[in-house]
Length: 158
Image (cartoon, rainbow, N blue to C red):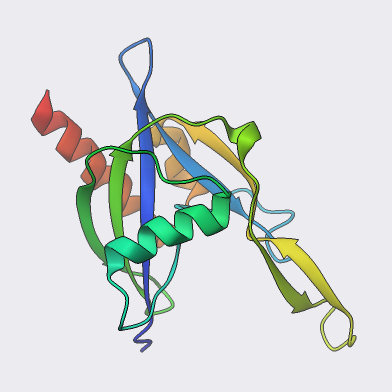
């Protein structure tokens, strides 16, 4: 089992029709290029023991999207263990941003494998607003619980 930990921020907005949309990102790089189902993620990333999960969530949002996290009250959505064994902690915050304004961070990897060639890829190659029921099949399975927890929180507010 992994002892790695990640933290992320799920941005949501209310729509004119009274619904809700969440902002998720399609994972960048060659492994995810031709996939849609289970190839999207809440903007998140790993953090070290000397960093708080909240600080990491804000930092990773900025690193992955190139935009600061929306200002507002952060709603704790708890933790979930991913298939990899990594524990992910997520908050939600209400906000709105233009996906066209996103300037994703990048990572470098050897591609094709064992070629000796290193290429740079975006961490997230596109972002979009989706109704939770449309986002669920796109998200990696271990993150879907955060959509359910957000819906419970918003339902309790209504």
